[in-house]
Length: 112
Image (cartoon, rainbow, N blue to C red; front, side, top):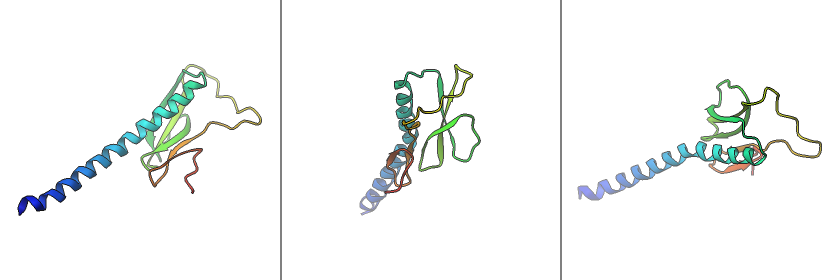
């Protein structure tokens, strides 16, 4: 009888650990997506860093993850000039955001 009672507890523990692992991998996955998009534009001299959402950091916010508790920062490394403004008629850089419900949004809008 004791083994029957421990099965649901073990299943719950296993599900919880999988959820924690998936949430931790969220920042890495989103950072990799942003890295690929930036490199696709021909820029190779940059650094992406993940910091706490309320922490001061150099660079520009280009995404968020872990349900908004962290932000992904972009900073150019090889050039002293600031990134140029978007050309008229084009959109600026797209922010990839992990919404509080766990979905990923391009453009930073988590509202349905």
